[in-house]
Length: 296
Image (cartoon, rainbow, N blue to C red; front, side, top):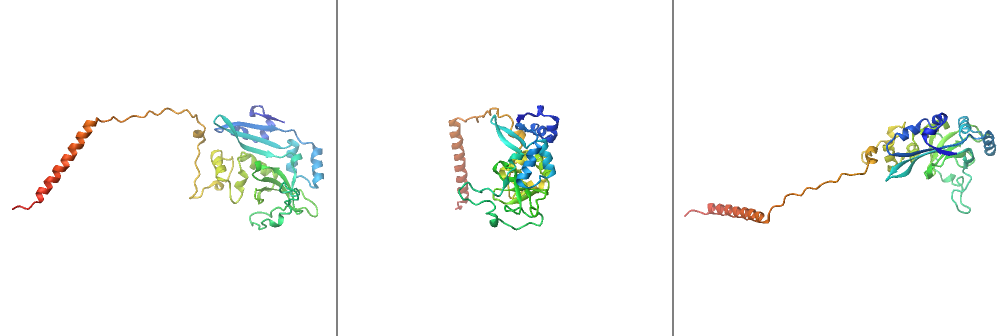
């Protein structure tokens, strides 16, 4: 495995990334785009994983692992001449496609597992979404993407009795342990991952509460290739800065501003002007008083 710039990528890897590297490198402010090239997974590793977990990988995901044992692409933007990591696209290798639900939810002795927390979960369904996954024996859940700690994208088998079928769905588990449906197939999810450019918290665009204001700033600057713009529509009372990347990342060299001083008037002229104005005022007031005196 090694990081490779776009120019040295093989044509097959260019097709694997759907040409998104060219789009990123042409975007203003993008500094580093790296792609970790991975060898295909051994077929016996896939068979071993299926036997260990008593389930069959969906055909599209199996074909992906036979082409590349996982996926890892990152890109950065440049701030103050230093690269700042921003985008991240990850699909775990077959060896890291680990199951959720059986391990402890907290790093404490005798801590409850995710399955133990199942009764505390919100079970209310949504008519527009399929039945939510379960951490107990009703579902098998495997982590596809750790999402940089912002949640987990999971491969979910929901029909485990009497036998596990290869029919799977892709769901997003947020940090509050709520489930959000993403796609029916791995292929559809892979397209979402690529077209959203790995922007921070992009998975939250498919939740009822949407992405955070900070993440929305990056969405406004580096818009995904394909996205429902209604997901980014702003409420009338909300305010989000409209960032122009051409202005944000332009050179910081500023031309000096020359301040012009107003010409100062001599002190004597100012005093004479003030005395003249005061004398005029007194004379006017005196004339008005004389006009009001009754004639005898």
